[in-house]
Length: 246
Length: 246
DNA sequence: CTGCTCATGTAAAGGTCGTTCACATGAGCT
DNA sequence: AGCTCATGTGAACGACCTTTACATGAGCAG
Image (cartoon, chains in turn yellow, blue, brown, orange):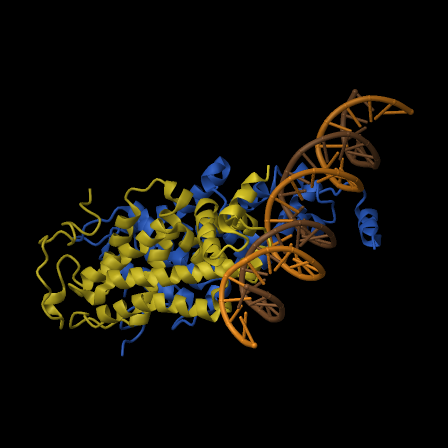
């Protein structure tokens, strides 16, 4: 009956050695499986092979664990977005679209983090460290928007970068939470979430005056981009961002 | 100690008379207060003045109550969107924008419903009635998009209405869940969620080729709109949807 | 090496929930 | 008046969250 517990103990001794980390990993797995609501502190403890009270040596309560995961999530999120943005290389629009894709990829590949970050009900503004991490992640989008705003073709009014950033964020989050995760992904769509978001962003950018069917770099103030390997692979298909209309 | 319970009983007798409805109302209040995750079946029962076991005569389990609320939410949601759309009166673009506003208004004024519908983890596709209600609500947006798509100015390719509808939905949901509710609303924004969404949709529509700084009706195939009372009140401010750029 | 200390883990217990079951009540029909 | 069945009750079970008093042993001082 309890041989398992005894064995565990024999394996690791009375002290776990790295319980905090083990709990975080266990929680991550459980959240990915059953969602932040279904995750239980007791389960995480069991999975780490310790008693139900042990976690309280490392987290004030269940919410603090959740909050820690959310914070870690924002940090990884920032890293991913940052890598995707790559400081706007090879050109601003390409990099910008890459950021959008990275957003969805993160939501899809790290459902546990995304869940903890945006769907767990953790009050972001209650924990300063969490809030800071969240803002650092958003700042990537904001910085990208800033660079993009600076490229508005002459003759068109320049949109506020902050507004653009919020718009892009809302599109990405909207697509991610409605169509790109869990059961929501089962809604029958005419196109993939990635394509949906890409088209949405392109149409939006066009609405701001960006020429989206060709690289805008040549006519802006931007230095000429590195010639891409795939000549027009990431361009917009003819007929508009959504393919050919019937 | 128990005089309260006795008094309750004296007031209403052994049978409650309308427990199902009372439970739904109680749950709605609790969800609005503490979120769908914090809401408990036992609390709802207490609030209705019955024992913890009574609710099981009306709902298979806690999830079914939540699911019922979500369904009711979608029904009210549909009604609101439908009223806002008003079959495209006085003209398609105006009505379309009104739908966007109605979306946010619903999210703000009915946080409990919105929460149950989109943030409670209720699997929409598990309950046919719920799924149907959800689809009916979405169909309002879809129908509006269809009418709008039919108005694309000559010379511009016509976007698929379904795609438009999904785009609009994702924008509205993104803005609503990121900026328009609960603690999330505390993020410091340069503009209100309503304005943010309105600008976003307008830029998007412009990206599709719609002239958004004036009523597009005159040049489309649409019959001339009823002359509005406020001549250009709902039009777009000069300089673009976001006001004057610096 | 000895012995102390304190971070880390355990067991036990109290409170809340969700859920089930046998039983009680009484509204409405015959 | 009596029956029946929908509706509500109380008790009980197991799971969870959290606290408290106690146990263990790693690391350090002497």
